[in-house]
Each structure stands twice: as C-alpha cells, then as structure tokens.
Length: 88
Image (tube, rainbow, N blue to C red):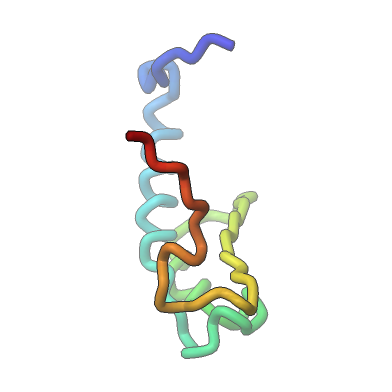
C-alpha cells in the first residue's frame, strides 16, 4: 500500500466550506445529561442546537468505549497495560 498526502486542491471549494461548517457544528456537541454515557444517543447530546445550521445529510458516528475487567484496579494504570520485559 502506498500512502500519499491528502490533496485539498482536488476538492471543490464549496465542499470544503460545507465540511468546515460540519466540523464546527460537531464541535458544538455537548452532553445534556450527567448520564450521557448510558443514555440513548439521541437523548444524551444537544443534537438540534449543535447541528441547527447544517443541511440534511448523512453522517457517521464512531464511538469508542473502553471496557475494563472487573478485577483490575481503577487507580493503577499498570493494571490495564501489558508489562514489557525490561532489557538490560
């Protein structure tokens, strides 16, 4: 696989403006409830307020949630990371 730098000159100016508006709108998303982590996604954030100035479109949501084993300590970072052997 060959990775090449992303060429912004190939994207029409109007599309760049739309993408910038969308980026700013999504940066305005904020939790509206202290239990947003477990609330239904539609109810946990200020979607209407944050996205009010965007046109309809298709958006993709990627969510990362860490899951810890019940036996690990919440206070010890080393308990959730693998130990690598020390080299002399």
